[in-house]
Length: 328
Image (cartoon, rainbow, N blue to C red):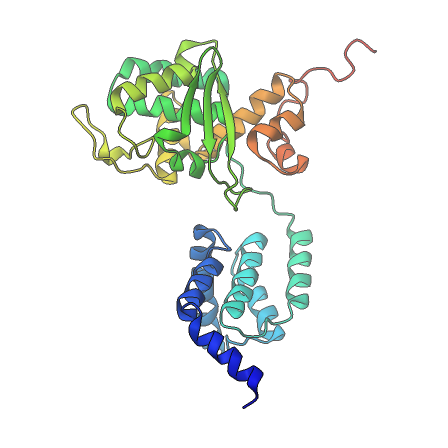
């Protein structure tokens, strides 16, 4: 054996435990996708393998023809184009994980593009909660006075004022919220859909002109009840009572349930509402107040103007300020 190779082996043996390093490298690679995305990918992969078994095709490695046929089968089964696209991404992800060659996706992408143009699918949009509706809801919650009512008002006003997604609301800890005298609340969002690397950002929840919908006032009421024990900012419904708490973090579904229960309490059909109604309500209300798109994006974290416009397509075309002013 050459001297250089002997020296390299000696360095290899004397170095750190490479098995542990490889294990940690694998752990980091598993975090290249959000947890929810990986769960969805696993489900999609199981669906794909079941389909392959039923038609006598090999799932790993899959051929471009198998992938194209599978995408077509999913579209025929009624899945949306966006859902079929996620299946393609899930299959590619599994091949990458297993160190298998990723099948050429050109044909599958052409099929998806054609289906998208032919179907012209519109995204499911939640009905926005308007400020007048939020005031009715919060007035009723103030009269309610229960632990649930106090918590729900804090969730609703904070979600509306910040435009946060439900996952971000659920992920907040007590340490993430800070009162700023005369201004409102500074809310630290440690990661989000558009900040997968967790760089973090601070969002403002400004003081409201109405006491019932002021996020700072609602938060003070909630914290008096919640106490100062570190941990989740909002507790799950199962952990709430007037006598004490089981300190279980609220889930994104829990935030969704709060919104549905809230709109139902003022006589609205909850079917069209959900947690996203708070975010849509913020965008709609800000637009009607004359706030520019860039300022709205700064608060919501949207990365394109088109995504903000999605919320405004069905808005009253005359509701906003006149862009011509008194020019004509």
